[in-house]
Image (cartoon, rainbow, N blue to C red; front, side):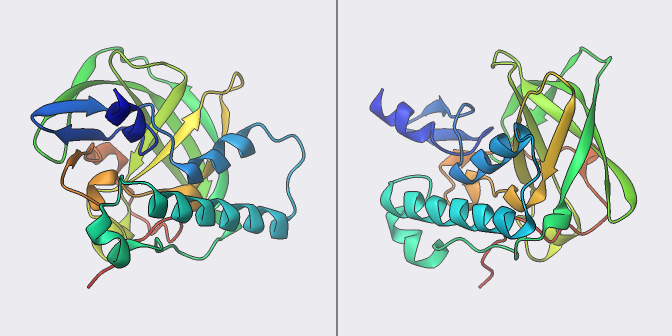
Length: 222
């Protein structure tokens, strides 16, 4: 339907709730996340100023899209929530990560913000180092969805203050090498931050980081 195609633009992993039906928007693409996909295919590293400019341009495009589209930000909340609030772009939060496939093929129930449960599979861990500290995040895939992307929700210590309490998301296109750029500058808020009509995955405890990640999208606190 037209409504379904419209909602598919937005957050990977979110579910649109309307008129008693659930519309799947897992294949949606947040405009800012295109930055990550492009960087994963890059051969030559960008100069720092070019990298920053590219992130800022993607953020501006996302603001413009959210302003002009009816979702995910409702018309009555656009003045309150737009433009989106971000940390300053910090290239040190764009780090290489090695993907280690999971040996656990069992599914589990991922909890969503409205209490719903959906079957999800662990794909593997992304191992990386941030500010000299070794860390890892689990990547997931909803059962029945395409296997060409890694869904990476996470919480960190900023989730208690500046960022969305239930965590933020990153989406990575699969690479044949198992090597990724994990760019927290493009971490984004779930759609349920903008509207309760969305049902969003709640970050599993195994992806709760005990460090601050002051990068990517913030929330506007009254």
